[in-house]
Length: 242
Image 1 (tube, rainbow, N blue to C red):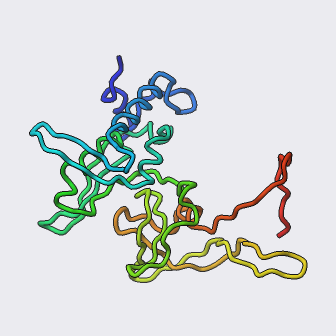
Image 2 (cartoon, rainbow, N blue to C red; image 1 turned 180 degrees about the horizontal axis):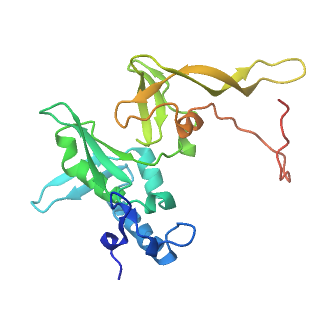
Image 3 (tube, rainbow, N blue to C red; image 1 turned 90 degrees about the vertical axis):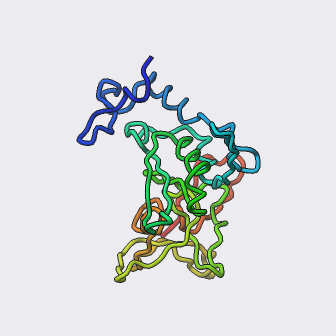
């Protein structure tokens, strides 16, 4: 049987999936994909209904770590194909208590990263986190419900940390131009609505994973979400006039 260690070894760094395990489109073959899906689902039973990961080590110690909702949500989903073709799509990060530098440890599975944070990293840094190299959109349950302005600052959805984070301005200050949903007041002919308009914005970054608001998943996840209601039997949404 093919093991995970034998699947990779291609590319300059040797961390890409070998071509013999991929089809003509670069996707993993069905048997390989099944193996990786099983590896991704491993360890889900260790997370209770309260969202806490519980584990025992060989020395008999007991560990608990509160897994962020976003991580739990996408752990229950199948792993994505662009994550399968790289050896280490996840990493754990924490700040060293000796040097004050941010450290990283790469993992081939989400379970391994969570287990490392629960059993080791959280004891030297209570803000240790699991980070995905490939971003995830905000889960449907959290759309429009993030704690925006608090006493500690403004929170945004971080696609790589897969949770809400505080973002800070880049120093020296940088700006970029992108389309942003803006609220347009109601008129006699049309009700109030959101409309994409080009705006100049400051560059913000996450101190944990380093992603900025230039990322398309960041902008899509942190835009205002609208709920549209349709009559029964309607199969196609009517295009709105700009």
